[in-house]
Image (cartoon, rainbow, N blue to C red; front, top):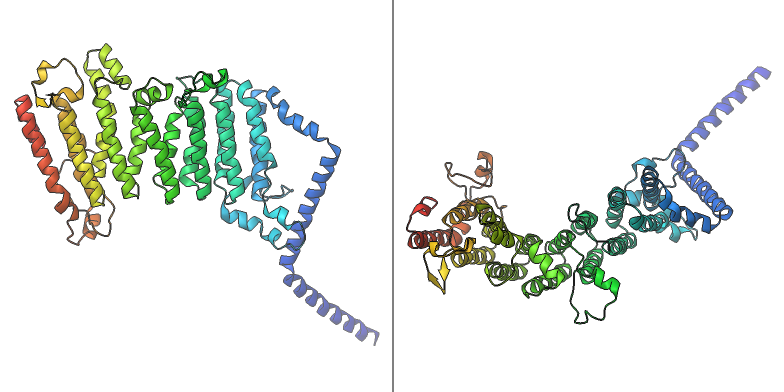
Length: 526
């Protein structure tokens, strides 16, 4: 009997263990949740203890005294501060065994990391739903302290780390976090641009370049509008904006006014990217900023900003306009083409101070000076050439008419509206008659129109028509046999509406060249 009793007890004990095992299997997820919450509670308890033991003044002194660190130390300090900031924003506790080294700031990751926190029923739920930005604030302070005290090359390395973190934070799914990052960019940019630019290194361009990534990849419309307002403020403070009270300004404002040099390129790129945005308010704001700079550039004044735009950033200004030409809004594209016409007239005017190439052309009477000036024309011509292949009929017709008009008006020997002998003109500018320049225009601008039209993406009202196999290409790559086989529908929208006008314009240019230069060499180009 005692043996039997022992067997019964062991049997009961076995059944109980099975039941316990099943119960434990059912509660694995809850156990993991409780473990995670315990770890977070420990982290919070440790943080509270440290906060009570160390005065805030000593904590602030750590960041203020970062200017005394060595070069290697400050780089490591900034790197680790960015790492901890990523943990805070991403929701990591940073406890032992966590995968804190692989944090990211994507929207999916953000939701996954806050799943436990959003299920909480206590009062701390609101606190956890908003990411912490304490280290992000301190990172901005450290950049502020070290900006003026460090050599430019050293701070450039520091800024590469800081700007990468601010860029990823500005692309965060949380609107408040993204807004704070963009505002941090604004504050640091205003401080940095107060320093005089060194032309060789172009630190301004490198400093403001992260703004391009934010404008191109951000999903928040309000953040993009804030970024455009920041760019507007940068132009107003450092672009040499005239307000009619130049004598009243302070000495510091006079020093900073017109100090924007290489920074114009990312600024104009941000404004141009606004034209490709899906939101109308963003596009309208960007176009107003761009047209304001073009008007100031064409006003023929000697203020610092127009001189810099004309002499150093003319091509960047044209590229920003071309972004609106290729943008989704037809009205903005047409107005941008009209602005390109105004810039071409300004470029061809002998009475105005033209970009750097014109100054070099007056000093050096050689072939190189002419080619340098042609570089100012080339973005306008090539941009209009690409637009002739636009799937929208209005845009490609407007671009073709404008392009042919610019070539006829500015690339032949004209005086008082009449064709004259090119050899009688002393100037070597392209618009005063250069047969070699016209040949380059045919090969690099007019002929590639067919390539741009063929390689356009397939749309509802147009199928690209393949060019002949023996067509000599200069820019694009020919479509493969498989790609041509997919275009079996016989829709000739571009050929019917644009090709005839293009050929008529080319023939007209050839006839005009025969009249001016007494040679038919351009006929071979047709």
